[in-house]
Length: 267
Image (cartoon, rainbow, N blue to C red; front, side, top):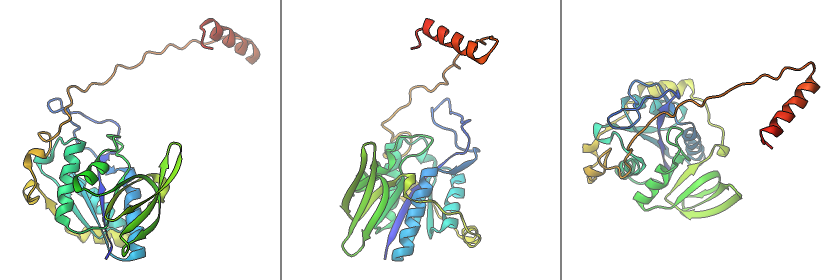
């Protein structure tokens, strides 16, 4: 039976984010969040393959308790089960520690055929967590996937099309594998009324560090992050000076503008 796992992240809906001055990490508590937009394409692709092959889709996320809203939205879209990883021990994790924690949760979930992630999160833009999970689990990673033409459970094989700067690339891999998707892959569906009702009734388990048996606690959160942020600051606003060109006609204004640009050696 086909089993897909989708890793999602709840990101701030606003660009007006706050930084904890002591830890230099993003303050997520109390900030309205949404599913990372790239992750919605991963959710949709997993659901489509479940509809083709039968099976189930499990969605997982690591974050504060409010990330439960993102998981319920994913269930309302069509995912079958969800798990939230939430513990103070996970706070402040960089991409490496996040990938480690998610990989330990995936190990506990058991057998799977495919892991899907968005290509990157809009708040961090690193694109490192998906590949990091694959590395921790020792499975193939297929990044920047724009299409999955073939997925064969019996042959344990998958063929994908990758979107690259210089063109497109067809790659074949064995299963299980991890795929990070771009927005070209599909058009995410909206939650349905029945899906919303099911998500409302569904009890989503919350796993803490103690639930990840066999994991190394020193690799969680801020203490387990090899990346250390020394300082975060907001750059000063760029000063701008506007000069109006007065002229009798548009032609005169254009001529004066060209003369000024030549004098300033703009071109």
